[in-house]
Amino acid sequence: MAENTRGGLVPAMITECEQNGDQLRKKESSPRQVVCMFNPFEYTVRKSNTYKHEFNNDRNVPTMEFTEAGEKTLALKLTFDTYELGEDVTQRTRVLWELMGKIETSEGKQEPPPVVFEWGVFEFFAVIKSVTQKFTMFLVDGTPVRAEVDISLSQHMDSDEYRVMPSQNPTSGNGPVNRIWSVQAGDRLDLIAAEVYGDATKWRIIALNNDILNPFVLVPGQRLTIPSL
Image (tube, rainbow, N blue to C red; front, side, top):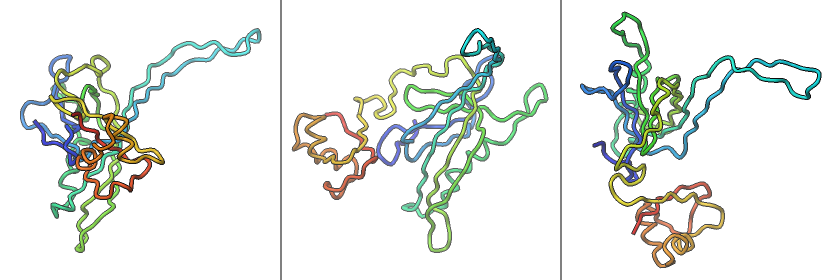
């Protein structure tokens, strides 16, 4: 099992897959894999179809005829930080670039390697369509130690992409489900504790779980992990 994220959560992962007949599965021998150091705050799934418009003067809107199904895409942003380790962050992100290479199929065709993005109950079988990597922190010698990576994946399979995987949850693995609280203006840890636990004095549990040194400073948009008791 992959190590947890910096926040102690079960991490999202991108893993190389292989073809098995008409199905895809995770590659069994030495799969290339990216384990998220920080889980994404959000991800976006998008699909667009193509239609033919037929205009009729008797109607205010045209009739539409389906002509082509579009691919489903997944977009997300990931953050990688190796400052505390003192190592080049590209050692953690280079696999993403490798997974944009090409492989040769048994039919002699050259195709991008299929991958699966999985986080809790969500699976998305796809190929990596684009990667944009922005470096935002460096050591004194110029070694990059923090990177923000925007990734776009293009659907590879239509069936079972939302298959539920038993005994796994994006925040807790096999344990109780943790909540994610998105901080709003005016939120305080004691008020949050009163809301989720019914006891404002339990704010220290939230502070410790999120490495909050100053409980009076919360930033709108900040996401807190609320551990189950």
